[in-house]
Image (cartoon, rainbow, N blue to C red; front, top):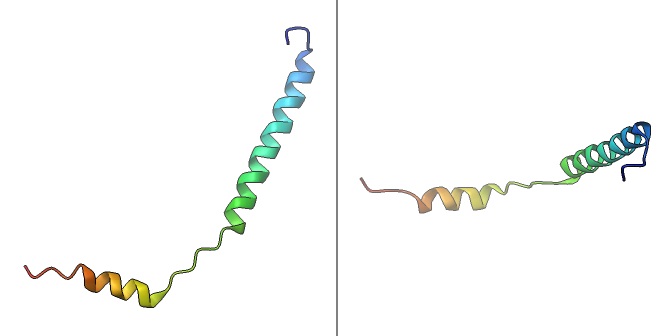
Length: 51
């Protein structure tokens, strides 16, 4: 709203940026990527070209 003061806009910007960064950091550290070696070796033999 145009009636809002610039300090209020700045506070909102900082608030939403903090939420955005916290959300991204949490997603980065919570995500658990497990590499299974048996499936990886099967995929490598799948692409064994004969030329």
